[in-house]
Length: 393
Picture (cartoon, rainbow, N blue to C red):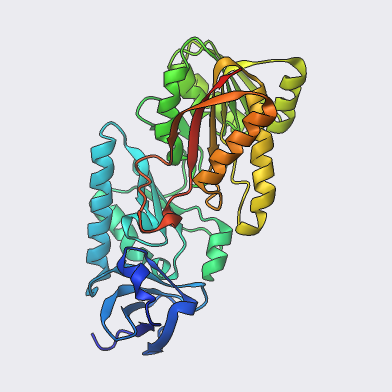
């Protein structure tokens, strides 16, 4: 194994890695041996030359090494096969009635820089690691031979690819890009991969969509930033009287309409293509109120620099939402901004309630669905915040 390049860390920089974190940053490296090139599998040693594990190297990225295993890796194909089948077994156990879910959540499933969403026999990839891109042929082979994949293609986010110095073009690895009809365990959706967000569907909110059913029966419901309609569809399933779907994207409103009609709900559905802030402000002016308001905005904080402005945006949004909830009604609020901490999110809720002149009771707080596991030693694997509060006057 002497031909494999080696990375030596500065003194004490191995502590975080040994505790379970999987990223080695460029400023933590003392020396390299063997001239590693981007995408190489390298062996990592501490400053005393004790072996720590193996990872993918990228000299152009701030994350210079993404750890793959704490043992020596003889055969990446065998390792990837074991990791993917382990990830599938977990999802089968927690979601026995589903055939569509996040199959692989990068670092959290010990396949750093690789996300795989499963839509029946269609697999959509997001590849954010140079090493994973170099070995994507092995992943495609595993999905095809072990899982019976019919279609495999990528839908990457440009900024993450740029950080790794990877080509920005998406690829079709197998089959073609067609739509898929999926079931989230209760609700039917049609997923159009050509126009949908992310890989086509937000699996991360799935468990939270089921949770809001507890507060939906016989209620008037507002699903703001509705996207494909997931929260509102679950409210309708649980017996809501009416659901109003709001999104600034006409494409998403049309998707929500299609999904609503697919499920033949009894609830009355209203679909409005409008900026959410403008709609909420008009409701405040008209004194229009709902029993349950759900706000699931896109990430306001894309990086640390944008956090102060994002906090103001979240506070304004939550204040407006709280103003249009009936006394004793509920607000379900989310943030998918990784840079916004749980404590900051709760603080925003408190400030918003003060400015709205409403009291709040926190009933529920959670993160992403169980097909998005977190590594406790790696806070970067936790990003979604979801809170349900009851409004009291």
